[in-house]
Amino acid sequence: MSMRDGSRALERCAALAAAVTLSVAGGAAWTGEKDGPHLGRPATAADIAAWQLNVFPDGTGLPPGRGTAAQGAPLFAKRCASCHGEEGIGGTAEELAGGHEPLTSAVPDKNIGTYWPYATTLFDFTRRSMPMDAPGSLTADEIYALTAYLLFRNGIIKAGEEMNARTLPKVKMPNRNGFLWIDAGGQPPPSP
Ligand code: HEC
Image (cartoon, rainbow, N blue to C red; front, side, top):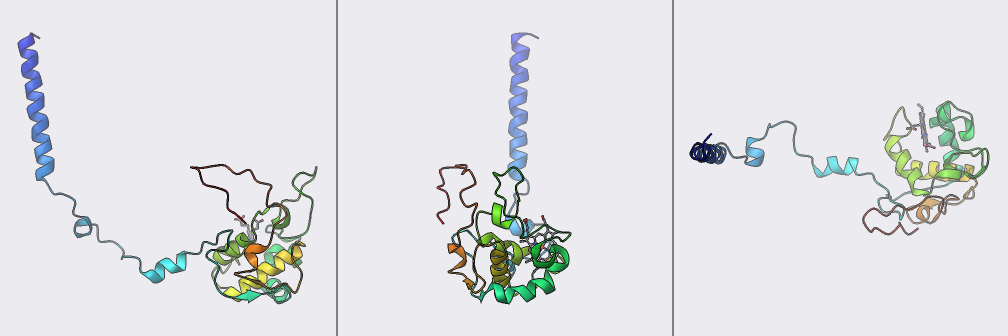
């Protein structure tokens, strides 16, 4: 190919590129919802509220309500023991109480009392996913009572201590400082 042919080829390429650019610009531009696939419907505030169940270690997201371990015991027997065993021990699903051997022991127990760093996670997890055969069926008072019961069964609070949005975040879990904080983007560790 001569220099001259080469530069003509380049010119043709440039013209073609310009034509392609023009046809994209001249074609149907995306105008958002008007041209959308029109599937489903916009999420309403009620839809979002039903899914926005996150509870944070500082208690953000906890609803009003209250309950004690004494109130939680019969509920646990009725709604949870079939899978988790009587008093949270010896069922087919995860043991929720029982052994107290710390993670550093030769034969550690990995359960709520020895492993979970925040008490508020118990409320969050139970509210969104338990009982496994009917998630979402418990009231806030029932979840506080069950949370209190499991904390009591793990030797962390007393039977009569009321759990609510103020007291639950203050419960210090035994393994609270057993995790390494990985700094992802300069965030400080959660305070409680
Ligand atoms: C139909 C069986 C079933 C019932 C009933 C049930 N659970 Fe569970 N639960 C499970 C299973 C299975 C897991 C393990 C799920 C997983 O690891 O993802 C689990 C996990 C849990 C955990 C997390 C345990 C851990 O160490 O990770 C908690 C807390 C819990 N359940 C609480 C409850 C409470 C409170 C009730 C009663 C309101 C209840 N569950 C009723 C089957 C059940």
